[in-house]
Image (cartoon, rainbow, N blue to C red; front, side):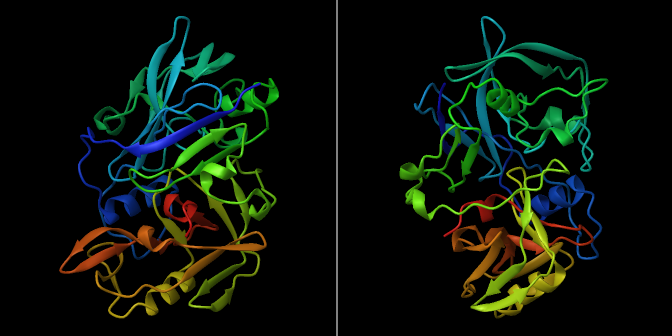
Length: 334
């Protein structure tokens, strides 16, 4: 059995251009088909990228569009053809709420991540692509990391790569991890191992919570938010960890309380979300994951320039969505 560690670095050859907060928010809103009165903006593109090498070895991964995409290099076939696949964080059938889509036939072949080969892995060959997929640079496809409930291959659903790694005993432990530091720093993915030393934490300090996978997401209880030490109880609230989303989407009451704690912050309907002064002192913001709470890293609070000395906030309204969405910024806590 094997272990895989995938470090993340910035891609300096991206053709997607600089990210904007409005485009990232637009992408999330359309992807999850969220109804919100605050959203105005254009569609953005959010992907994920990483690369792998063999057992406990490392190969750099590329971060495209300022942390909006991480790609993993995967070989398909014998001999293998290396493709850059982005982690969409789900395995739903190639038709998304943001309007992107693809269709085609499903085949089985050997899929290799580093030195780990998954035999008889289902591979969906995209024979028809929407223009948004064709225009996005830096990736050749997607690698789903969510639960099988989101897989809509017909007439018979197929196992995902991670599911096959686990069920076939290919990796040491039945898990994968995502440590999403920013830019050129030390973020990484692992499959089959928890690399606590590389993450800079003691393994005894790692917190665990039960996951509800009935909807296909990595969903868990998130019944509290803390802003500058003041707790907001969120009875019955749930959240998902989603590496395919750049920002955090939370309830209107929580997002309003966060920006009320920032002097000069406001809801800007023209920008499509909350903005705040670039020189503002940011509040301490924590979200519950099960019984534990994790503080948002101030470096991840902004999603870029909003003009006139303002920044677009990385935490926005979830609108009518029934659960919070904790994206990349909230998965690299302080």
